[in-house]
Every structure is written in structure tokens, then in C-alpha cells.
Image (cartoon, rainbow, N blue to C red):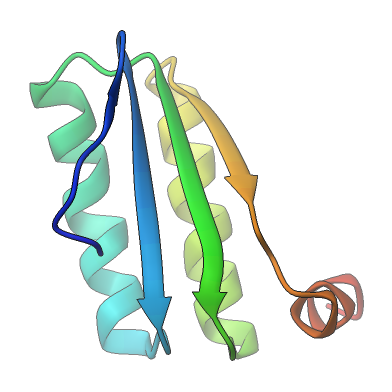
Length: 92
């Protein structure tokens, strides 16, 4: 995850860059919900414009993270997903 943490009221924006392997996806799954709770975040915007490749397991992990955030009452917005990645998500 990017080290910059823009603040938008009670919202946060996370910019993801590079490739996300299973280790990195599990880190996101474990730490993002905790940080969101600690910082009393209402909306989390995840910018995927810097991501070029995701495999099925990683996509599933990111869906789980989004579901957990929803259970915590956090609105999760995903932006910047490349068309080829969207196609792979739709095929799941």
C-alpha cells in the first residue's frame, strides 16, 4: 500500500502499486480492517490504477476485505481497475 494517506473527512484513499501476490493480499486482509477501525474511517477508496496483474486467489482476498469492511459499516469504493483485470474478475 502507498505510504501517502490522503484524508477526506472520515474517508481515506489507498493507492495500490505494483503486483499483489497472495502474501500482500493477506496483509491487506489482516491489516486494513484494523486500521480502518482504529482511525474511525467511514469510506475507503482503493485506487487500483497502479496494479497490472491479479490472480483469482488475490481477487477473492480483496473481495473478502471489502465484505469485512461492509460488516464494519465502512463504504468501500474501488477505482482505477484496468480493463484486462476487470475481464478476469468477471470470469470468476
